[in-house]
Length: 260
Ligand code: NI
Image (cartoon, rainbow, N blue to C red):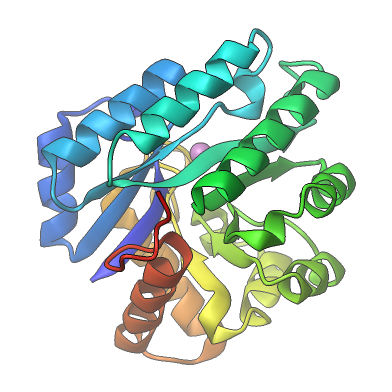
């Protein structure tokens, strides 16, 4: 089985039961569905309760932080504490590409998410788009390395990779790794140690080749995993085993290590 560590089931414009059973038939499980605001986080928990292979992450996406209040952070904590299948806080982080929410808002929300993940002993899922320096600085200031940190859809260069590996973070790759012009990203992926590598779809976004530009679904994480296997010269079966072990380690799935 190949895990998809980052999908947005609530944003996929197809019947969710069918999407999940198609993924299972394609050998993709578990799926971690990611909240982008309070409503979406609540939905993520609902999916995780309804489907055995689905786990939830709850958070407010940097682009959705414009109107976030202190009350929202409390509500997020309630949602996270309310169900055993919530395995992570996120996605959170900084997005200076879209710039839909002022940077200061994004930073405040990011800090609140890091504190929550530390308090709950949960993994932290980090979105960093054209904000590498500030992202790394805030993660350090807030001592994010006291919990597990996942750099979602990693887009840094080898220097940044060295930094995040030195801090003990996990590094996750999505569909763009399969694009023809992504040689540099493939090179970076090949430098990630076996025990820190994760794969994801970010469905319905970032469809891998040969589906680039089309709405994405979790079963296509297999194409991402196959590309990652090729870049390090191992078999797809070995890659599946490695990704499964790392997903369990990063998110505490299948263990009792979550603190309550
Ligand atoms: Ni996402």
